[in-house]
Length: 269
Image (cartoon, rainbow, N blue to C red):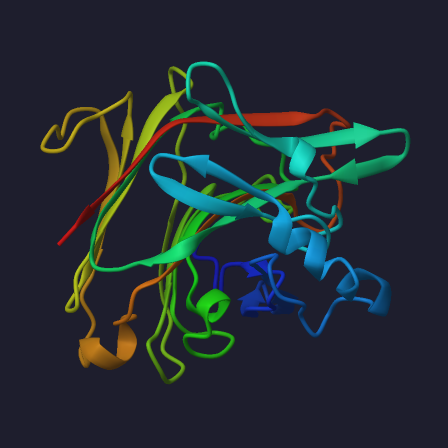
């Protein structure tokens, strides 16, 4: 089943397409206020700007407050352990849920993006989304619904829907490229990669931790090579985001969620 207009990030308010005919909003960076924040939430901007971590050679701004879904971002849900692994969590305290989100303070452009992930991304609750995404509007590049490249593991509230989602929002215009797929894993170790060029974006998803050039364990690959590529593919360097969030409702099983990103590598073109 093809899902149209896969749901996105929101803290800057990236406009979403439709999923099964419903208009949905998306998530974005936490460093700037967005149109969907309450007046109370906008007062958190100064605190958000001050919340940063260093990981894999980059400074990351951690969302503290408004982001996608029903759970606000909490810096306590983002941390680097003694092994240098990045943890993203969704947690419940009392009756309240909080999620996780962070963005680079610098922009990354054409090149190879690779994540080694330790977590059951095939078994995420139907309301949980793991997102890995360059997002231009975070750096003032383009408007909502443009300049975004997404890897998302999510079922968007419906356990029957595919759990793998790749989506590209254009440099300009309204053409959106997307591919969805369903997968199951034999372990919790996976490698998510895309290679972003001016003319195309090549995605791959592998079981196990893989280095550059290792094609073993391939689960799915897809190359987006549209006509008018300079219009339909983002062309400028963008902030890179990662988030773990609740779509529409908290986890339906009532359980906390944790994903560990053991490694991230960006190789410029």
